[in-house]
Image (cartoon, rainbow, N blue to C red):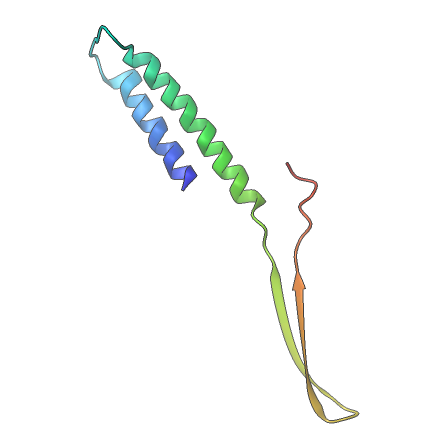
Length: 87
């Protein structure tokens, strides 16, 4: 969601900065456009970093027959990668 919000903020800021030629006495629309574009880039980058840091885990379930007792044995293994070296 933050990636889409960053793109939307950047687009609105670009429209305000480059496409509108309206002069308003009480606000500078060019500066607001540049601020929105900067905020959009920051939010986009934060969204990318958070997406990369999302933890993933793999669950593997295997079933085999124990030859000694002729019973079915189920083994479940969960693996989570170690992301402590990141940001």
